[in-house]
Image (cartoon, rainbow, N blue to C red; front, top):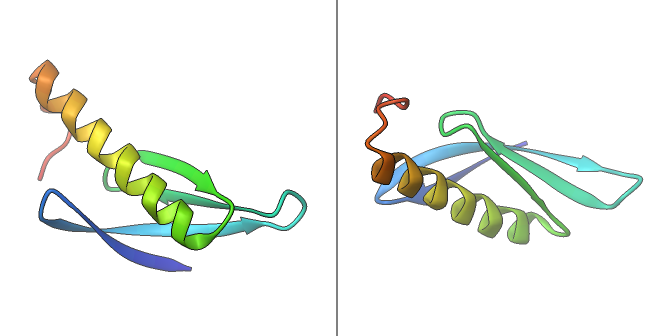
Length: 69
């Protein structure tokens, strides 16, 4: 399933899948090369927002132009 989320005023798409054995939701944002997990979809979305914010912050601090927006 796909869900939209907002980071720094921009909207991104996350792919969510569920691990039935472990009862976790795995979430990935291919646009930002970030991924994480959570016990619920909402927690996974909170986690992907945080992971994406940190990814963008590190990229900005390092002056990297790896991502093209």
